[in-house]
Length: 310
Image (cartoon, rainbow, N blue to C red; front, side):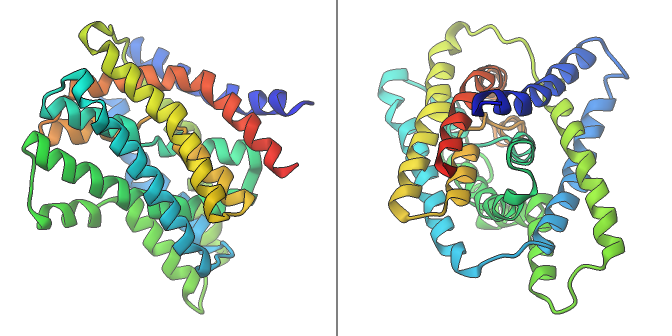
């Protein structure tokens, strides 16, 4: 089987679950109240379980935290600066510019982990967990700061700190890292339970992504959505690869960094935009269009990444 065929074989079921979630939600099954509750359950329970188990049992190299942190920071900075550079062309007001910023740097964690596991298996899970542990705080800090300045959200340092400390994904990463560094480790029974819960997070998470999508008529948002999509799905992964190469990251680190840079934006961008007075309608369009376009861009990017391993 060729690299592209193998990648498509891994991706098609993932996007199939997204489509299934969309169809079920639009059919009203099992009910309108189900999908938001499922998303909260995944976000607060299943997904942290996956991160805890992955980090607790991973063979982490502390010396790689610095290079990965620098690579992620440089990549995200490039995406954010590109969004701001488009302001003279798009003539966006503060709330709309903050939404363009989110659409240029946020990533769909559910889809990212599902892709890594489907394409490379457990071999990349430790690097993936470390990448998530570093990216989530950086992305959230950047987005909250930009929304505070441009859209009039909570500007206080306390509000920012609380939003980060309450993030269940960050909490899961901290717990997993703490267990990994402790002499006790993770008890096999607990590890098995967390693993089972983590496996459920992937298919349910993908269906919840699909359930949250909506058919969006581009209209006046078309140019902004197209611009953010080009930045997020094409320019950002190219920048991530250049940064990873320049910093001498390993093949595994480069592959995971580029995959997460190439992901469509996440539903958390919509939630944050509503909470902090951004343009949530523009974010909804970004979510739908980027997820659809990612079905075309990700196979190409993954095919190129497969060549790194020879």
